[in-house]
Length: 479
Ligand code: 4AD
Ligand code: MG
Image (cartoon, rainbow, N blue to C red; front, side, top):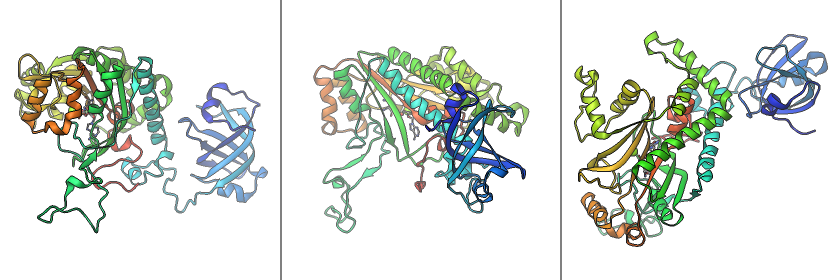
């Protein structure tokens, strides 16, 4: 008999069918005549109830059916009396293929805190919450590829070990093949990091953008989707040392086209998740409703997660320039009542409290902020005619803050070189990048979407550590 996944039973099943179910026990309850065993196989948030009459099975078998055990069940599908489920299995045979000792199995039936589950990240996939989160993550990843491939973009694999710091922010992890007993030394005896990767200084990539630009100058439209690394020692709910980024790069695109594409892309992948993982998102939304009950009335969410997401996909994002955003902040009662921790003036890097004010209090929807002061942005962004701002864009999302960073790129060789000099990047180090401006360069633009921040947005999870299977944060790399 072929195995049936629970997800398929939700749609194509009929009472009377014989089924083979394989999965893990979530709970067992009952009395001395009958046991009700909830089994989950990861295909959906829903469990399938297995009804096991005590006289049909040995005491031994039923004793081993405990929370966490792996079981193989055959039986007949029957209409269920239980609420919320159309079917259950009348078990004919139950095999416990992997026991889970109730004395030591850490995931007992009770609800566990997210903090505790982070400490047992190797087991947390087996909870409803993380099952839902990682199925949504999977769907979003699939939607990313679908969106770009439907539009003729070429998926480009950019290197993880590289010699450049694309963002020029000095937040790279060194890569080394050093023999610890025999490290190359400089004349004064210090370790020579310039030679750490077989004689060359290298680091883990912070972004695939520069290589992506090279490819865009041949394929017109490309995207990358891979892990990136930042050695920023920040312990926040929005930062990881290893995160995944999607970076499209488009030749013959300006900032406006870049913003239009980013908005269409974000809406597309959210819509795709709403269509394909509605049960999971509903479950995660319900989690937030429960969480809210412990909060005072005025701190509770006005909308459910699904309502929030539908609002985002059905409405235009707001678009403002950085200069307009600063004006809004300066004119806000929040500013006048001195409620911001950081001061506001033209030229500052927007702090997350400022970003969140703009999206959550002022516009109440995602906002695309463009044309930032050149001094707070990366060297490759195109200088505007005013000589002081660049064609940059950040997309800010409610509850998250910055979710996308992008720009039109500086395609004019002289201006690019001048900017690199100003920020201390050597031309020799990026000669290959500059070649794209020497040979057939053209106006082009792109952006980077932080994948985990996107998953946070769609799942409503408050901490970025809970949307990547094995989070890498300072001092955190156990598994
Ligand atoms: O704004 P960033 O640094 O932009 C770039 O890396 C550009 N090269 C992108 C491009 O134009 N191709 O990063 C892009 C996004 C941010 O908006 C944020 O969502 C996410 O990446 N991000 C992080 N996510 C998790 N942890 C971190 N430490 C992150 N740093 C950036
Ligand atoms: Mg940024």
